[in-house]
Length: 224
Image 1 (cartoon, one colour):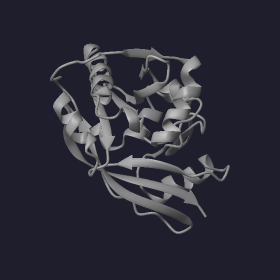
Image 2: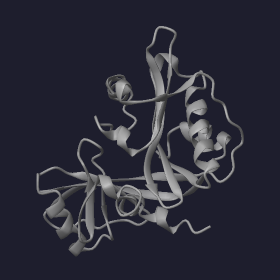
Image 3: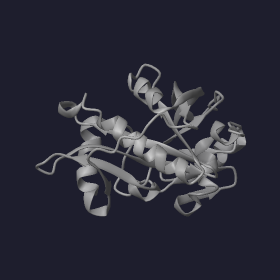
Image 4: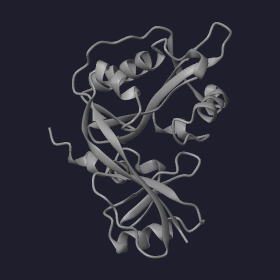
């Protein structure tokens, strides 16, 4: 299978499955800010940054993932780091204990959970990306969640994997990620995700069937 689309996943998502959520100008694009602060570029050229400046004309910034380092031109401020991209082509098992599909009515609780656990940016319309699932306690508290974010051709990203501190160690993340991965594989697509290299969650993902594909460069930029 050709995995090259995953070398520039945000740009390829903006131009394919999530075109309806995108604002594009030539070689750059962004999602609506209430969906996600992610941005994409055709490449890291100065021309692409010029197009990105027009897309970010409201003065906001954004982050992108690429398999190659980006040299940020003058007139931009940037933060960069390396994370791992993992893919799963075969499941090691599915656990679905207590998992339920989340909807618009759950968004306030999802925003509260992501604010408390900081799995990455999550806005009022992030649920527009795809299916999100959660696990609630007996008294109704949202204890853990995960869902689908970038979608491009045959690939779907799993993101927003988070569990409240007091409920960690119960296997909630494994149940959520394994269910979502299985649903993606069932329709002939490949689940992928991004994780900080030092994050011990990567070992949970490996037990499910994910393997590191390659390191990815995270570049967060804002026009000065």
